[in-house]
Image 1 (cartoon, helix red, strand yellow):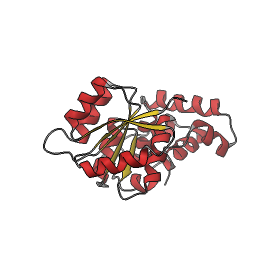
Image 2 (cartoon, rainbow, N blue to C red):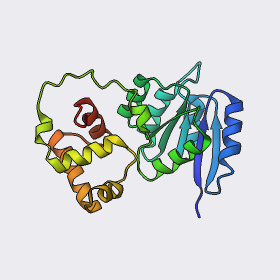
Image 3 (tube, rainbow, N blue to C red):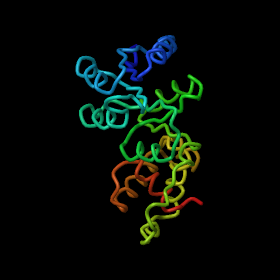
Image 4 (cartoon, one colour):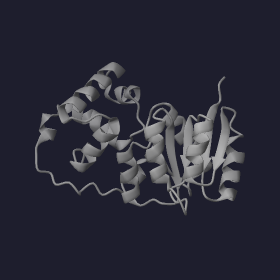
Length: 214
């Protein structure tokens, strides 16, 4: 079985050593490289492809994790990105969502949480646990229109489950609503078309901003 190739980036060598030792105990995972800066991360990706990049946010004095993530998204769109950081501020979490970053893990969480995040993003899911989304202030945009009235009852049920747990797959949402996975996917695409959105994470942000599920 092909191993999951990871690239780890943190400005503390002791953190990198600990992460590498732990993750390489996972039989499906292989650490392809480690980097102490954003610049080193991009250099390593030029030399060695990675399935998932684990990034710290603060990596002084050069490029921080957010800017590094922007460059990775631009240059290597198939590579998944998980931010592993001490920063749990809602502003940073919202910024990560808007940038299309795939996962966000607080360092104080267990190492098993990081493993769960890696598997989630490789399954084409987002990993932003509800306790993190609850820290985000989505009230910045006034509710000046009524697009939400375009959504059907079923679409609201689906978008609210997506907002409740962005890691839910279409199959898992379908199981909760007793409908087929393909039906969920069709409703999701219809909502994107109605609201002129392109990604599932944008639907989640829309539901939270409009307070559709409160």
